[in-house]
Image 1 (tube, rainbow, N blue to C red):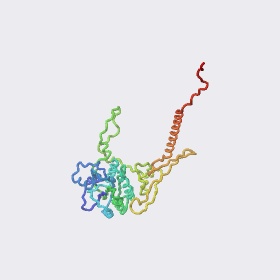
Image 2 (cartoon, rainbow, N blue to C red):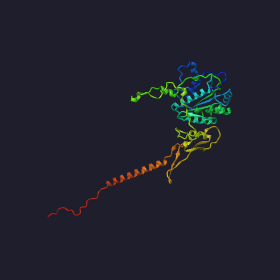
Image 3 (cartoon, one colour):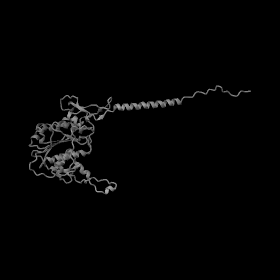
Image 4 (cartoon, rainbow, N blue to C red):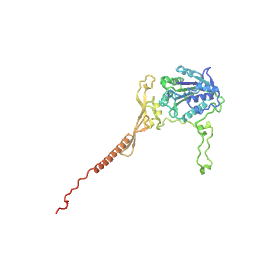
Length: 394
């Protein structure tokens, strides 16, 4: 597992500027395409290579887990939280610190930009579904403290952001973070994933804030605006001035699109492949959108409760309920739902009714054609010559 510490680190750890730290985070989260390194010096490139995670190989012997986890904690005072996490962590964590750490509001904007960039990326190759499984297990651990969300089509990025306003006990916070860092040992070496832990100190009350403390970078809307527009056919309306404002070449961070997080009562159908079991009822309700509004989550079977293996935990799944609608006083219409999230309509009865009717009609038509063919192929009876004779001989 490739872990990274940043924040309040003891003397001896290198100090990186906020711009360099942003490049390191972008490399580790897989969104480096939006962050240019054209004008950086050689030392910055060395820091990115050292802390930016494993380098991609040209010929990979096995599939890698694309899962990424970002744990960002603001308003951390002293080294007590770091020490508590380190005591329970079994892996070595490379670490650095940020010189002149930006304010919490600037960090919040950077996190939201990372999320926006991750959402615009195409689905990452994950033939063994490691990213989804890892995300579910990470969420099961972090949701004990605070709501967390996964982003991108296959949920490869999990983001956990907390500060002093969340009032999370330090012991619980340190324990959950250590469990995530130790996930490679608990959940198996075959699903190695990348974890980045950021511990930011409190912002000074009267500090002078920079306009862009983390530097400049691109957003998905910026790249779309820079693409060449296709030519359009001329029309009389084309000569009239447009009332809509033109998109600028450089996006304004103040007008940055906001990230809309789905509400807890979302009952829209889910997309993608879902597992047959979930570790808790909360994860089941979130991942299945409350069973798409056609059922409820419950315990499918009880686990042994021993060990940290997912097979020993309780299995939660959706129990689907049929929808009954009264069509008239004497008849009702029943819709049966199925699937791991009750998102699929059971059409087995209409299908077999339609298929049976079609087979019956095809049999009757073929039987009729066969009967007509057999009647036409029969020989006609011989002609009776009674009363007919030839001329008599005189």
